[in-house]
Length: 169
Image 1 (tube, rainbow, N blue to C red):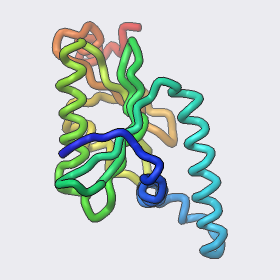
Image 2 (spheres, helix red, strand yellow):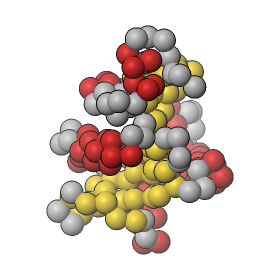
Image 3 (spheres, rainbow, N blue to C red):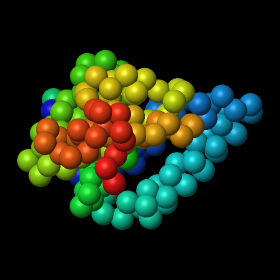
Image 4 (cartoon, rainbow, N blue to C red):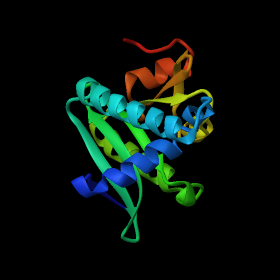
């Protein structure tokens, strides 16, 4: 598996991933053209929002055996590394790609004793149990999202979270 920076030629893949990872947008009533317009509008809004909220983000395409199978966006902050997107194509899900990306980020974050944070939807996603298995803990449930964090061994907030006393910030 390999991560590479996003290229201009990846835009169709990125939009396909956006649609596949947000099935709840298709729950809206309307004709296919309306649903497509809804996805396009939400996609543009998400991109603009991500660039303003995470100006120092890195946008990667996940490749397996030379083929693009997903995408991740990571904001390398000083206090934590925020995984703002982790998307895997439908046909590649269930093969450990997302988990391997997370484990790689955990290994890198451990070297700097930096926590990883993320948010996952409460509905329409199977991310929560996967992140829990990978050691992430719920920091806050704020519908429609669950906010989670993973702390390297020895990080002061790891002990606070495992004692149930919340973050030490």
